[in-house]
Length: 266
Ligand SMILES: [Zn+2]
Image (tube, helix red, strand yellow):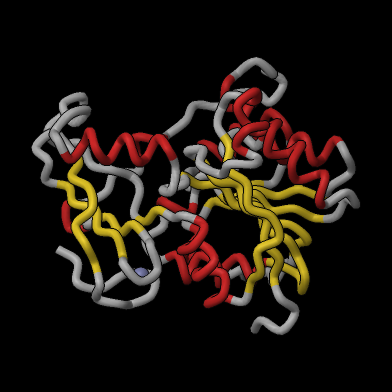
């Protein structure tokens, strides 16, 4: 049970979606800021996302296809090579692409194994840390910070954005990608799950990895609280063809946001 929104602190939470095999995982939507708060009392499981290393030269791999789209987007708005930090960099494909164009690159991953695989294959420096606990001991500042499908896994979104701010130069850019709750597929998912459909595919002890999920409104609220401004908001799917449509009607299942750290932020 949650009685306070983890983003705005308000108590105006509505039971919004039931998930899990026994429909015992409750998601609450905040009526004030629109954040979807997952009830974390049931526990979360981040181990289900553990990836094996995929070479960035495997251009057909689905992970790398998605990352190439992120990089194509980012390089349009950050055309001058500088320094970049990718939080939860996976197999470092985005850093591989950035380095080819002259960027100084560094990543962060949760496991030593992931960092070792990347260093061994590509010679890229990867910090092993939990981002919410990382206090930037060498006070390195970057031009760009990237979090692809990381924000929704972090219980404290405000601390996450503050930590991004501490890694960025003034006016530095951050690219964030995460699920978009105000999407067509989430609307359908909610109807089905609240009727007990689509829940049986999970084992009884399945636990989600997500803690909080955003739409544009809740994300902009988060930015305003943490000293950032929204530069671009897009929604996208894995089908490039459909993305032409989603550019005008932003209801795709995933969001891609470019944000700027305000120079006045602490
Ligand atoms: Zn709220």
